[in-house]
Length: 269
Ligand SMILES: Nc1ncnc2c1ncn2[C@@H]1O[C@H](COP(=O)(O)OP(=O)(O)OP(=O)(O)O)[C@@H](O)[C@H]1O
Ligand SMILES: CC(C)(CO)[C@@H](O)C(=O)NCCC(=O)O
Image 1 (cartoon, rainbow, N blue to C red):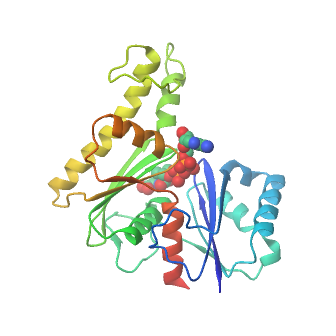
Image 2: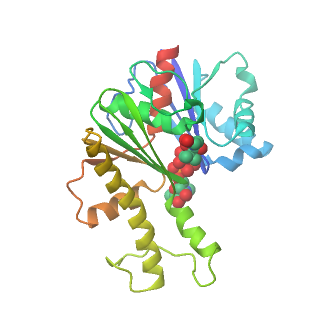
């Protein structure tokens, strides 16, 4: 049996996971990855942290037969990532980019080389999970919202500041606003500054998803499934449920980018 190792280098977190060749990227079960983990993407900048990470991964898994990755954290991060396992120098690192081809899918992005590799990977991952009209929401450092038709066409999407960025920018660019902290008893409309900021940023994120649903319907691709992934997925989903939007066909998922890299690698072995 072969082993495949994947990396998703985001702006905040670096995630990895490994699977065996008898597994399938369309599998829906929660415990999908034989091995997985995440650390701060900044760790790649330090030789000491790189060595620790490489040691940890090399100790927890046997030598993989292939490595696939996507990276939106810049060229230096890619160079640092590829330097991790000098002992596996014969291994081919396969990089999924925004313009990597994937059979059965295409993007309407005018210049696909500019499309974030994580967005394209998440769309491929979503396609592995379901083939209906789908909205892919990755709520990380940035929040991205992308429409994928049942025909495999990516109609494009939106990039918003993520929840954390929205809150931080209010603090850093105003005189009077603090860094807001999420509390249990969030009201519909804020009656304190803290509540007003948390509620306002939630409304911007949820409102954008709502608007995307309306736009998709207008384009005659009514959304049948929303996949919500990323570091802020859990809090956003809780807010969506609390807001009385229970009839949205939304499901939280983890590792959609890794899943996409996996599906793509299998097409390229
Ligand atoms: N344990 C955590 N560590 C870091 N960020 C977290 C954590 N839990 C929630 N977050 C939130 O998630 C955001 C990071 O999102 P994510 O973990 O998806 O990483 P990312 O690097 O932004 O990934 P991507 O670039 O793929 O969106 C942070 O801005 C923060 O608000
Ligand atoms: C939008 C982010 C930052 C989300 O991680 C990433 O996908 C990216 O850097 N994209 C490049 C620009 C684009 O997708 O059009």
